[in-house]
Length: 190
Image (cartoon, rainbow, N blue to C red):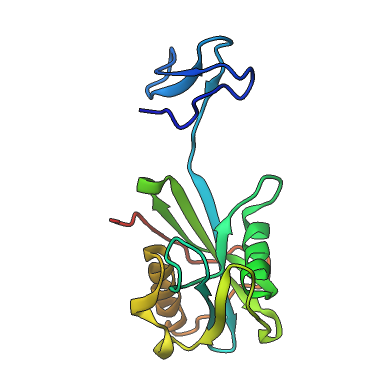
């Protein structure tokens, strides 16, 4: 059932749950003007912000997963790129500025209609502080990551992937703005 959108965003009349002609999925369709309303996944953009050999994590001040640690990340807004969203979220959640090297990982989270995209970047001068959605921010070495207290599987998998890449002989991050040479893609089981 697709009744997430109950009223037409064009004319305000009630929608009906039906499969439009030529489509293969049920959609919210306006019974008055015929407008088809699509509900698509949301993009979560974030950064693996690195300073020296440590990674920036934020302890969440909001639900879901309040008090758990996460990478600075959040929903992409209209009129910004995914990279701009990752930089904005780092500013909002950790009051940090990050120079991005490129996309590090993509995670599909279909059961909640999200796609998580994390960039690798340098935390400028290592500066960070508590933002409005964080209780605490901290730089962690790999050995000190609070693995059992990470908020989301995509964060865990992205960090594990980053540390596995970093352990490779000759690992060097690309120049800022250059496409990153490694990309992890997975479909979390939960």
